[in-house]
Image (cartoon, rainbow over all chains, first blue to last red; front, side, top):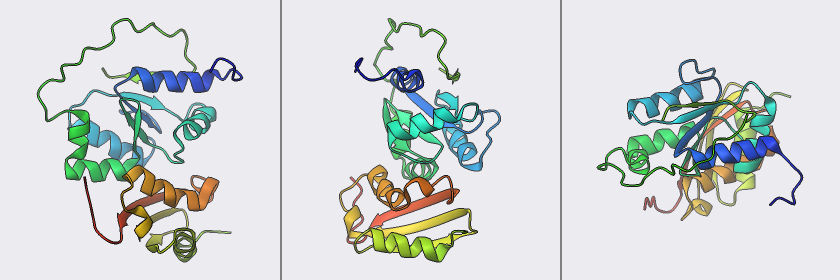
Length: 134
Length: 79
């Protein structure tokens, strides 16, 4: 991996996906979504009272570029749960309506017994800003 | 050239074997309901990727937004 040409943006995005149980890449912020699809996805997550990290892709076009390359998914928003791309607005809505999203997030289950990795090293000055709602 | 729902429908049906598509849209934002035998057994992510792959980098660019609902044509299995 270290043999690849350095790509701090890609590393930062990968790191953010790895370090956050639930992370949403969106246009705008949860408080001020800049696109209807992002707004709807945020609204679903908020309605489930699930903590999530959010990354605004708008400040730097490279975020979207690198994210699309990493995830092989062309549109925004993109929701990741436990490092896996769950989908965009359409899939999140479908899964919410069917109850699969609640299951994937574990919001219907008792408390998730897993312990957060407390030894996560703090990243230094990542080139993307993460609004962490955890 | 502006994209039309008819163009998207034709391209989806040509690009995914056996697919049937209903597409609505205003030239920028589109909604596609697609059924195809090829979706059978695939996750939603994989099904949607097949549709996105028809348009490549046009999605987000010439086709500003493409909303997708997919279903396998034969049976609707949700496992």
